[in-house]
Length: 331
Image (cartoon, rainbow, N blue to C red; front, side, top):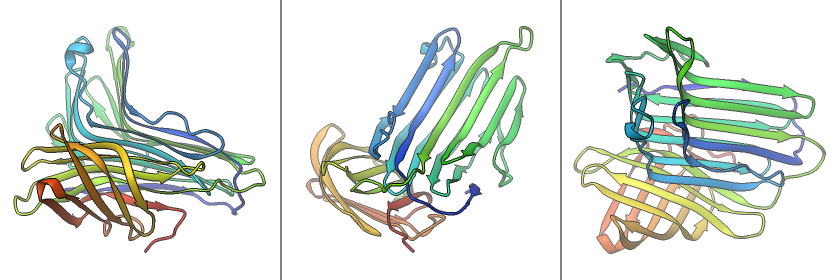
C-alpha cells in the first residue's frame, strides 16, 4: 500500500486574526453538456468564524447524469472548515472509483487539508493512497501540483493555489483534479475535483471567536476481518455555544453504514469524546467515538467507535487520514 502526504508551507511572522473564510467540498464535477454536480459542500465559513461542515455516506454520481462522461463512486465524504485562532479546511473521501472521458482512476483514500494563519501564512497537504490511473499505479513525487498526463487531458495531484498579500492569506488544496479536453475542438469535456479544502484569513487586529472543534477523516483496519473501516467525523462548539458536527462510518467487512448529524455530547481535547444519535443501516442507534490527535502527520492518530445497541466496537491507529484538534498543539 502506498501512503503519501504532501505539503506546501509559507510561514511569515505571527499576528492575530479578525476575519475568516473558506469552504470544503467532497466532490465537484463539471460537464459542459450536463452542468455542475457538487457533493458534500460545507458552504462558506462566515467572516466571524466558527464551523461549517457537510458529510455523505455515499457520494456516487452515476454516468447517466453526466451523459456518460463522468461516473464516480465514493464513500465517507467529509468536509469541514473551522475558524478559531486560524482557519482550517479539510475534505476527504474513501473507496474512490472514477471514470472521466474513458480514463479509469481509483484510490483507497483522498484527503486535502488547508490552513490559513496569521503572519499571514498558509500551509497545505494532501493524501492519495493506492492511486491507480488507467491501470498504472502512480508514484507520487512529494511535490505540490504534480501532473500525470492522460490520453485526453491531465490529472493534477495535490493541487495547491496559495495567495498571501498584505494582511490576507488563502490556500486552496485539491487532492485530485482531472481535466479532459476534446482533441479536435479543444473544448473541455470534463472538470473533476475531488477533496477540495479552501482556507482564508484576514489578519487585522483582533482575536478569534469562542469555541472548540475536533475533526478528522480516514480509515482503520477492522478486527477480526482485516478490512477497512472508513470514517469522517466532526464535532464543534460554535461561538454561540451550540453543538454541531457529523459522523459517517462504514465497516466494509459487514457492510455496516452509520450516519449522524446529531451530536449529543462533545468533550474536546487531544483525546476527544464525541457522542450522538445516528442511523446504522437505517436503524436508530447511539454512538460513542473517541479520537486522539498525536500531531502531524497523523500516522499515530487513533479512532474508536462503540455502538451499544449493536454490541459493536472497533478501534485502531489510522491506516490513512488525520485527526485534528483545533486550538491545541497535540503530540
